[in-house]
Length: 103
Image (cartoon, rainbow, N blue to C red; front, side, top):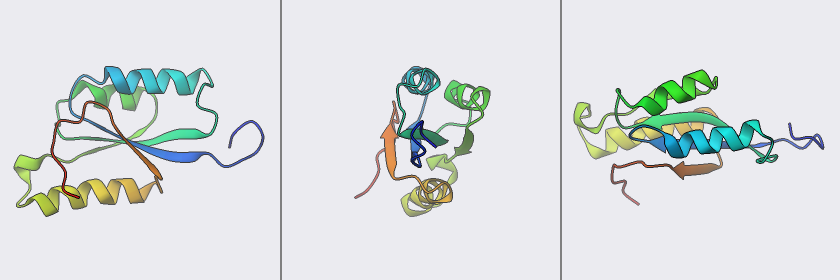
């Protein structure tokens, strides 16, 4: 909930690497600069992405969706979609996400 008791908008952040953009978002959230939004899940296209450690340190749910381990683009995107939907995210932020997504 925001300070005025209004429910916060759930945000999903998609990452691929170190997570400096993610960290900036998490820091802004911690400082109260995002009063109407809350990062609920971080999805990485790489299992070794440092961004996952940043998310875990902030207590944010993490999901890995590695394209090379999926049988198809559709399977890859289904993993991402499931992660986004699992937290009810209404906003998706591509924070250094380096995989191509279909429409």
